[in-house]
Length: 375
Image 1: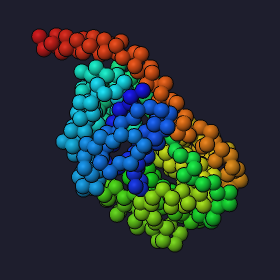
Image 2: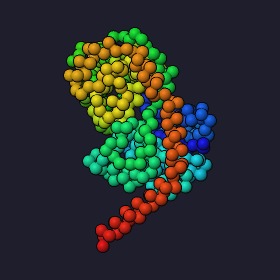
Image 3: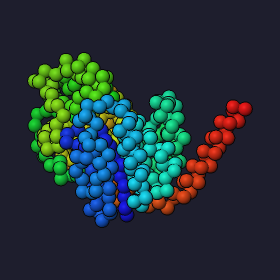
Image 4: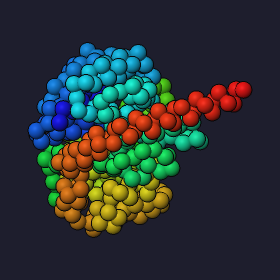
C-alpha cells in the first residue's frame, strides 16, 4: 500500500528525548516500511524514519519556542498532507493536540480514505465540551483507539483498537535491580509526579524522578516549581531532567519498580510497557488503560490510593521480573502494532464510500435541524 502518515510537528519523529506519540509514529513508519509498504511521513524536517519525509515545518515547534496552542503551522501541516492525498491509498492522521482537529473538516472533502488515531482522552459533554462538540460532528469517520478504555464514554466509529508499541531490543532486560524506585513522564499534575514522590517518602524508599518539565505552558512550569521541586533533595528523591532513550532504559531497568499514581484516565501510558520490557514491575493507580497494560499481581500491582501503593512497594520485589519482560515482548511489539494498523487500513478502504455517504446524510440532517430551529 501507499500510506501517508500525518505525524506531530511539536517534536521530531522519533523524539530525541521525551515524546511518546512521536516514538510510536516512528515505530509505525519503520515497521510498515519493513513490511514492504511505500510510506510517507508528514513531520518536521529533522525527522529520521525509514520512510519518505515531507517536511511541513523546518524545526519542531518546541525547538522554535512556540506555545502549545500555535495554530497557523498546524493548519499548514494538515492542509499540506491533504494536498498530497491522491498520492496514497490511505492517509493515516494522528490526532495529538486540539489543533490537529483541523484535519476533520478537511477529511469531509477527501477522495482518499482517511483513518484517524486520537492519542488523548476522548472528550465528553462535561470534559472539554468544545472538543466534544466538534468530534461528535465528525464521529462517523473511521477511528482507531489506542486502548479499549479510551473509547468510553465517547461514541465514535472505532473500527479497531491497536495498542502502542516499543522496540523491545531498546530496553535491555535487568534481572537484578538496584536499591531505588522510579517515576518517569511529563511533569504535569495528571501524571502524578508529586503523588509518586510522597508515596516514596512515606514508604522510606529512594525514588529517581525522570521528568520532562512542561515549560511550554505556564501551568506545567508552575507545577514543577511549586509542587515538585521543593520535594527534591537529590538524596532520597533524585531528579533527572528529560533523559534520552539509552539512559532512560538503563534507569528504568535498574529500578525495583515504576511508580505510576496517575491522576486521570490515561488512554495508554507508553512508559508502563517500557518499564515492563526491562523487567521492572509497575505499580499504578487502577485508571484508564492501566488494567489493559498490567497483569495485576504478575507484572505489577493495580492500586486505588496512596496507602495501597505503599503496601505494594513493600512486596513488589516478590514479582518475577522475567515474566514482566516476557509480557511486554508478547503483547506490545512493533510488529503487532503494524499488523493491527494494516487491518484497520483495509477496513477503512473497504468502507470509505459508505462512510462518505453517511457523513453527507448526517450533515444534511444537521443543516436541516439548524434551519428548522431558526424558523
